[in-house]
Amino acid sequence: MDYRRFLGSRTGALLAALTAAIVLMAAPAAVHGAGRTETHADSRLEIFSWWTAGGEAEGLAAMFELFAEKHPSVQLINAAVAGGAGTNAKTVLDTRMRGGNPPDSFQVHAGHELIDAWVVSGKMEPITFIFRDNGWLNAFPKDLIEIISYKGEIYSVPVNIHRSNVLWYNKKIFSEAGLPPPTSFDQLVKVCDALAARGVTPIALGDNGIWASMHLLENVLLATMGPSRYKGLWTGATPWDGGELRTALSRFATLLRYVNTDHATLSWDGAAQYVIDGKCAMTVMGDWAEGYFKAKGLSPNKEFGWVPFPGTKGTFMMLSDSFGLPRGAPDRDAAVKWLTVAASREGQDAFNPKKGSIPSRTDCDRTLYDAYLQSAMDSFRTDTIVPSVTHGAAAAEGWVTRIQDVVAGFVCDLDVEKAASKLVSAARGYTR
Ligand code: GAL
Image (tube, rainbow, N blue to C red):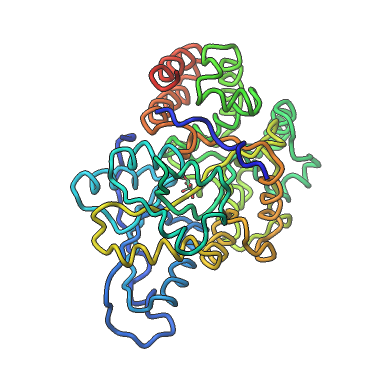
């Protein structure tokens, strides 16, 4: 398998955080005590993430349960900070890391987000030994290992692979309207018009953290430019000032006319819920939406269907969630145990079917995964792989923030020329 299709080169503060809620979701006793008699904890383990929504919370809980079975004397503390894509969590993490108060292990996207923000600055411990000691150096795709490595050492455990170029749709609405799921941009617009004429809001968007709009834009960019030119945006091979950027922005503006009017106050999972409830017909979201649908009792191909975002068939826009070991982790031994469970086949097979992602290991048990996830596994094997920029894989965090700011303005004024020139200047300094 050729995994060198993955990512761009490693070129390379967030929106002001809203109130960040530290959520102690699973009471430590409930987690570590499942079916056990231990009443005291030998050590503790604080795991930091932003997984609090349906699907992602269940995936994390499944991994916690497995950890608790294996290490019943460790008190697990779920320090998840609510807010999709880490909008709030990243700010809290930044403050904690700067203040010398790291959690024992934290969620971080593989690629630029991990390396540029934390590894290069010397904030992380190398964890190659976990892979080597367990004989797992070859259990992960070579190119995935590459983007979590720096100067020959591995710095995180990738727990999954997510696909970000997916359009999810309500099957009942589509069948009642006699509409096929769209496969090209023009078809998407036709379908939107047909749905709007029936009084259904075509696209659910929940961009209260603005990233969901950027997520939509990265999909439109990919559909408009194709995989190799899209990928080139992040390496400097594709100039930002070409006509394709303006075409993509105009298309993005077109789609924004079909979204729910309350999108700015809605979260990504709120948007997914609109599709479940039939308030909207489609949503463009990573496959954590699949985890959400399933957590709400829906089944793939039954209540909901999916297609690659129209115009992106044959391309898999990827990102990977990973966990690392910060220097000065207060409970280092427990953190190493956590990372070992997260990297194990058992850990990945417990987590991913619920999370709505495919395992990052290449040797997991396919039969545990549903029809959607099996289709994602197949696409991951055969498609062209490109990195998601919204979710930390394609570009440095500073650049991502600048793009996100441009998107925030664009969603309000739909000014293509203004956004294009701001995106061109945002790219300066990050592309060579
Ligand atoms: C992404 C993350 C996913 C999912 C999503 C929504 O950035 O990689 O695992 O959690 O945010 O919160």
